[in-house]
Image (cartoon, rainbow, N blue to C red; front, side, top):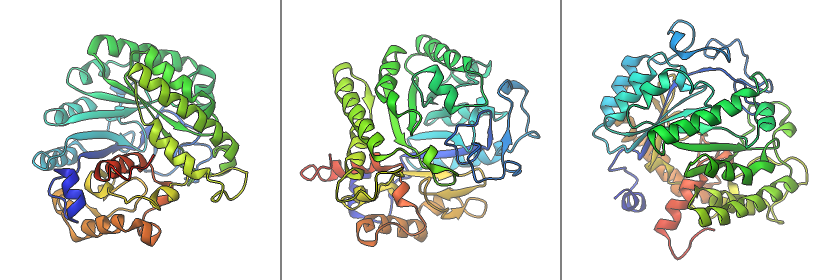
Length: 378
């Protein structure tokens, strides 16, 4: 139904397939590629909208006065609105780690009543008592790991003790054994970790995890981007590893987006498109020369400051402080976004979106291939 709707109308007859709800701006680490908490960030770390939490901090001692958390009343309002909109899954996220929200168990239970619910976390605090309460329902976990070995994990998380890495892996194994297949490992690929791409897939299999995903880093908002962005030669090596991951995944039944990421890199490395041999930022432009953006039919984000965005690389369309999410989803502004997505290859991008930095090229490729089986993008 959603695919047919995508093909024939600018209106969405259903709600988004997935809704990301950002519930906190508090974090206990400083991933080097993070546009907010990294030492390379352009943000003022004293900004009141952000909050650093000690790596040793336990979530059960958190309270709403120590960090910027979205109110539970507002979250209840969103949950009530989307119940009848055909939303299938809810991602709990934020500009930080949502596990620190003082009512995270209640939030997981609230959305879990009617939606597949996924908690996006760095895993450092999954060892807390809250884990048992959260996993009592059908909660899934998307673990932002970004490494296959302890030295690489430590390099990416400079303010955290290296021992956290093994503790995270031990916790994940316990979750898989006690609660079944609940975890997806997610890795942002950049200069410090691209050599471990294939090892990341092997690690997932060793932990009993059925799915691992990879996305390119977006270095916008960071200083010294040459410390983050891969060179073209490094991207060639990553492409080779992704192709190996794809072969490996077929042999062992591992779910992965390696094929879509490989397709993106193949276009980035096109000889006619290369600008130089130095550090090269992630660029999805070549993909959108060939396909449309249909993300306006399948996903949306509600930010911690109550704005609605079609995707993470777009400016907000409206605010749920003054309108309901349902009204915004069916508004003329959202319909115009969908039209612009269908015309993306003609206009070189969607107004108010950084389409070159797109992280949703994978879902868009899958939609394109489903709608155009004779003109697949590989």
